[in-house]
Length: 575
Image 1 (cartoon, rainbow, N blue to C red):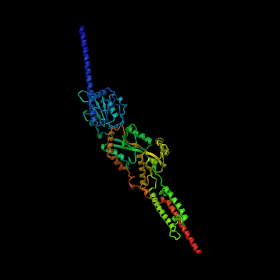
Image 2 (cartoon, rainbow, N blue to C red):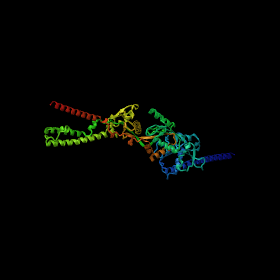
Image 3 (cartoon, rainbow, N blue to C red):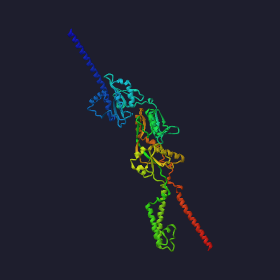
């Protein structure tokens, strides 16, 4: 009996061990097909990615065991026929090239520290789950909001070993879509847009001359609005635009960033604004710069015009010729050179010798030619160069006496160039005079786009008051002090940003944006019909001193002539 009892116990132990071994084999087999199904799908995606110019591949959360098994199986299967650059846990916010990101999603906390804030069309993300039950949890909703992109797939192993991996995606309405694992790369990451599912796009704009403004009916116009209006109409989307109310610059920046960060506004239209890290700044292909805005110089005085036709050396030579010629003629002739030039000496008188007549006549001819040339250059200079030339470069500006009103921070940056030190006047930002009406004697630093907009606004006012542009009150130096970028701002919650970004690139490359800017701009700088060209017309008031001198001379001559007549009449009467 004892032997039989031990045999039964041994048989039971062997049966239990067999069951354990069978269970372990079944579990290993199940783990094997879950890993192989996901690895098979990723292998298909990697092959397709090579044909779609994906240059960088990243694995995030690679410390999870399931993803490690998938990576090992991929490496073993492709060790001889697939070479790709792989980086672990590298996820930059701004990626210039296309990137495929494979993320392990079992442990959410392990990937939340990575930065995946930009909803970029260049980033393709695949979330790998070890169990399909995760799809029914809040984890999927959380990860969808975290990635916030249409380029986002979720792959999970199938429930049985004879089925392919489960690949899911979501559309813009948040609906879950089941995809076939063997689809092409472009089909897996395709845009699934339906206008009826898209919410109303909330646009925010800062009214700026030459870029975007409101007409009399309150409708937005301008080249920047033409860009976004074309995209919205092409997508057949509903939209609403509002303009930033008037407030101080500091409050306006915080107000705009809050609206973008809290998804109250999807797009902010202003090229000179750059949002904070809560939003996306799309950098435009064309750069902007910081320009010097300086007051236009005042008109030349009459003394400048009288001295300008001849250079200083020419004036010295003329004075020396007059002095030396007068001394020589006074010593050897009856009449001096000054007498011949001013009082019109009769050279045909019988007391004038031939030598004296020849010398004086030659001198008269020489000074007649010089006087005519002087008058021609004087008139040409007074009618063509009534104002000093505006500086076109920084070096030309540094040769002027114009002062710049700048803040402490700007002054520290400019003092790196020693020539700027004597041209800086440090003032608080609120006290800097930014008026473009020509009343300020100081220059300012301003973004070139904003400077041209304010100048055009002032010139429009001149045109409405006078019917033409009298003279631009300020001048924008052509050479830029530094280059800065132009940006369009997008909310990070705006899922259509990748599509808008794609259309913006196409619009810039097609030249339509340049066409809209030319169409909506005011041609004050190239349409001569809008301008009153002062440089070609001179008025009576501009020559007031000349007319005064001529008037005094003629009056004195008339008085002397009258006195001479009176004296002659008196002499004849008493003779």
